[in-house]
Image (cartoon, rainbow, N blue to C red; front, top):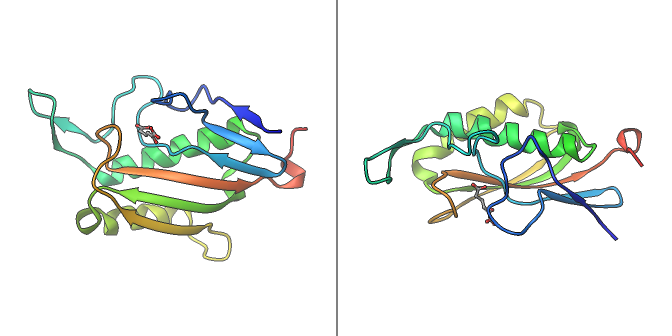
Length: 146
Ligand SMILES: O=C(O)C/C=C/C(=O)C(=O)O
């Protein structure tokens, strides 16, 4: 038995999958990117006239994806500190790792409370984004809403 989470403050999924599923204390988030929840625009992207991405700002996208993760956590009755495992997908590891890693350090300054992390370089994501996160959280007992 699991609870389906739909987060109104997070970008609409691009397919038939929920923002998250809660199974007991475990919370599994779907992969999520930096799309703006209100406009669906991708922050930090600039485009050619034909719609291809001309340039992007990985710092802006990393901050935006963290905001989206936070929105899903909050809609699930969880919080930032509940994150235990994060897989990060980057479409250009060589270009973007350093800047993304610096934003990560701002959001998770303390190694003793930061979630586990794995960063993977991949060739493409379903929308023209440069970063996507796949997160798992354990909702603390004093934070549970049921
Ligand atoms: O949220 C996005 O912009 C793109 C992410 C999509 C997926 O993770 C997916 O379709 O599985």
